[in-house]
Image (cartoon, rainbow, N blue to C red; front, side, top):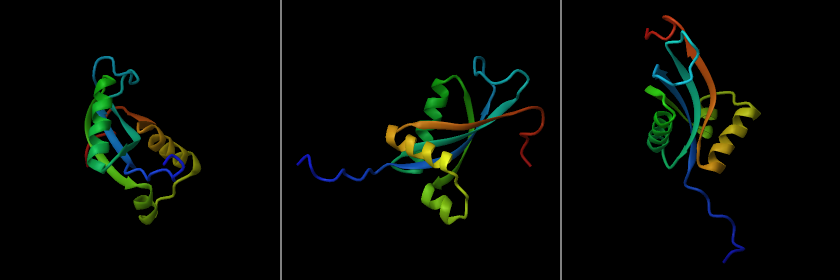
Length: 116
């Protein structure tokens, strides 16, 4: 029946912070040692969102090194994160398009990306 309500998607959008290293053709600024990418990725679960994000970043000639998951919108709100309308819109776009959205890229220069 085509008039029935739209089936609820099993997909959720996860917020991921991906650290990438340098690789020829990666498009990072000259002199940078890598970057942090804030991504919104859709998936059935966080593991799928991470796999899809890493696969897409590798196809884009980047070198993903580490992924930190921050959960879904609901999980982030429950943890007290403030999420602005622009971020919410990007999350909705990732869900609507079943895609990975890179919301922010912060290049690293020198020692600032060293682990504590």
